[in-house]
Image (cartoon, rainbow, N blue to C red; front, side):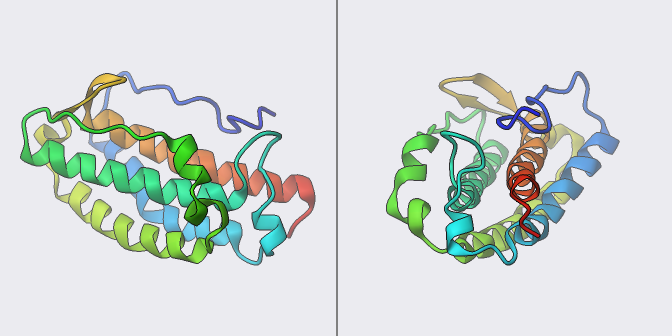
Length: 174
């Protein structure tokens, strides 16, 4: 098994229809509870265990999800209210090393994810097909459609949850 990509690398969808969007929105809706279950009962030492050699710790993964998903939610709001806005990228590796992400309690990011995903899902459920065609400009990736971003973040939820559940399984942590 590839410890970096336990569910495989992200593959952008060829076509996106309402069924795919509903499936991805459902994944985002369930993600905070699934993440909470994935880390439930882990000790501080376990939270500070990298999910793979030279990888982030479980703690850093949880905080990364909050950081990344907050960025995505804001990018959606920008794209829905501006024409192809240029967004600001961030260095996720450096963010993961900041003290709050490196050693802060995971509960803070779990709560952020619960509240933010609730708002994000409500926004996504209110969007029309035309809204999902709206775009933002990413300085490193070019023009990005919101439907492609939805697919990416549904994958992102499952990707990092699998890092944690895979580590738990390999380590025999019930």
